[in-house]
Structure formats: structure tokens, C-alpha cells
Amino acid sequence: MARTPGTTEPNGVVVNDADTPNLPAMADAANALAAHSLAIANQFGDGLPYERERTVNEARFYMGTAAEAMLETGKRLVQIKENEAHGEFERIVVERLGLSVRTAQRMMSTAVKFMSPKLSAKAPTLALLGKAKLFELMAEDDDDLAQLSDGGSVAGLRLDQIDRMTIRELRQALRESKENSAAQARLLSDKNDRIDQLDGAISKLKKHVQAMAPADVATEMRTEVTSEAAVAEVGIRRLRAGFAALADHTGEHGASHGDLMAGLLCQLELAIRELRSEFGIKATPDGNAVPEWLRDEPVTAGD
Image (cartoon, rainbow, N blue to C red; front, top):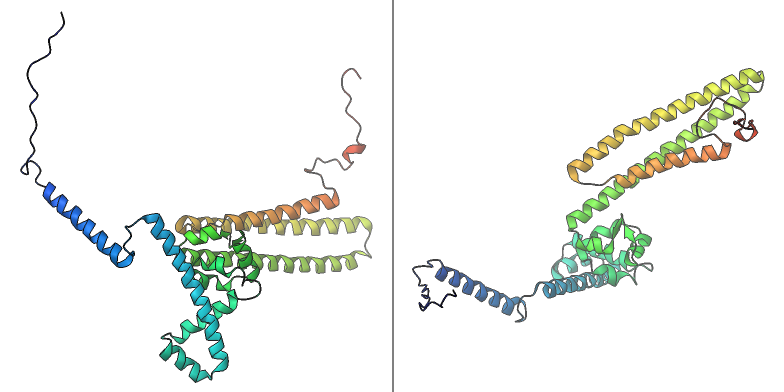
């Protein structure tokens, strides 16, 4: 049997201020925030309401403009310095331009750097990074900076990555890159010194063995080569302590040393492959001095 619709009307819910004691305060806070936002828009935003993306893009535009203005100022400062006496130049910088002498010197150095023949056409692109980051990039090579502008990298960082970094992060990345480069240069120098020592030892050995019997020569040469291999092995195993220290540094400070470590191992592996290729050395010793291609083929059942 079907139910008949009820005839009772639903009761309406009436909400008053007593039921929502915090509502007036929330409304007042919202009104105050809106008024504050409007005041900020009128004072700093040319009357336009705040929009994050538009405001961030405008900020980046003016940062680039400021950097370009700094470069142009630096160019004028160079002209003033080259045409005025030393004391008069400093007086103009401090009294008429309101700059410190150190700031003026940095601006001139930056202008000379980024207005060089290799970088003058790239300066507008690099200027988008802002003047503070241009100061940090001052020590980098002109060719590297030109490549950075064209989509390459400096210290392993592309232009968009540098743009997103803070000044502190960029400074740290550039410093660590220089430290890694210096470490690689020291290792290369040590390797070259070691090669020179080995060449000298080999030259002496050749003179020493000329008067010896062939069997004695072979024994002495094998002993010498074995000794050198042992020294090389010890050197390689000593890398473990250095790699462990780099790994600890990464864990504590977040700095990556992976490229340096990989590069060092690649150098060692390349040197071993070159030796193996040059002298046709077997992959592993098998106790058989006869080349594999001259050995008798194994006899199989049925042959």
C-alpha cells in the first residue's frame, strides 16, 4: 500500500548572531583585508588588483631593466673615471651620484665584463637575471657566459635554473663548482707528475738492463711493473676515503659531488681500457701464454 505524502511542512532554521559569535569578527577581518589590499593596489599597483603571475612577471621585467640601467651607469662611470682626476672622480661618485666608491667600481667592472665583444649582444638576456646575479657571475669565463645565454650552462646550471635560485644558492653553487674544478686540476697535475716520474724511471731502467741477460731483464722488468701496479692500486683504493668524505658533505649540506666522482672514475677506467687496447691484453689471466686464436679447438663428442 503506497504511502500518502505527509502534510507537515518542514520547519525553517533561523540563524542569528548568538548562534555564530565569530561571524561579525570574520566579516570585519575580511573587510579590513580587502581595504588593505585596495590601498596597496592604489599605492603600488597603479590601481590594478593583485594578481600573482602578472605581478611576478612585472617584477622580473623591472629587475632586468634595473640590471640594464646598472650596466649603462657603469659605462658612464668608466667614461667619468677615464676623463677626471682620481680625487675628482671619487667626489663626483660620492657627492653627485650618491654612490660609494666600491659600488661604483663593481658597476664599472660589470659593465666592462658584460659589454665586451663576446657578451655585448648577450647582455640583455643575461640582464634578466638581475644585477645581483650579474655581480656573482663576474668571475665566469666570457665564452661560458655566452653559451649560458644561448641555452648552455655555467657550473652545470642553465639560465632558467639560475633565474629560480636565490643569490645565496647561486653563490654556493659557483663556489662548489670552482672547488671541484680546482680539485680536478690538482689531480691532473699529480697524475702528470707521476707520469713524468714513471718516464724517468723507465728511461733509467732501459739503460740498466742493456748489459743484463734476457732472463734477468725479464725478471727485473716484471718486478718493476708489478711494483708500479701495486702503487696504482693503493692510489685507487685511497680514493674511497675521499669519496666517503664527499658523500658525508653531500649528506650534511646537500651539495652534489656526483659529477666529480664519476669523472675521476671515468679517467681511471679510460686509462685501463687504453692500456688493454694498446697491448692487446686479455680481459682476465687464464694461465695460457698462447693466444686464443692459435689454441687447438676442443674436441667434442662425435668429431
